Image 1 (tube, rainbow, N blue to C red):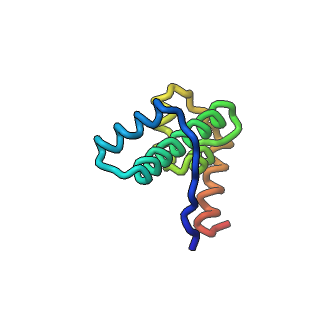
Image 2: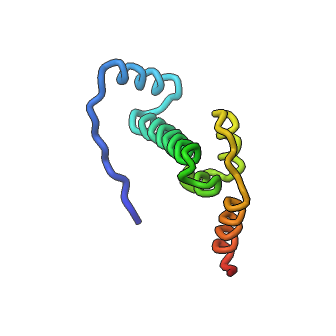
Image 3: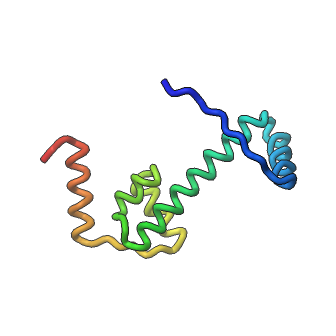
Length: 107
């Protein structure tokens, strides 16, 4: 079992003030507040990264969803909200089917 790791960072005073405000409003201790914010920021980064890769034709829709750790439906919704055009053709469909069959353990 992996143990949590301590991460230390110096931050400017304005970020500390914002963090203290979040702690007060949400009734959180510093560690919990930072952890929640970090989870949220990393989730957003994964979505942004997968969106960029998809927009640049470097990933299929299914691969982008996997990279972002969301469902294909969630990825499609995100792409629609960010106005990224869908790039789904027969080859993408075949790749997705192969991925589904591989996960199911079928040839």
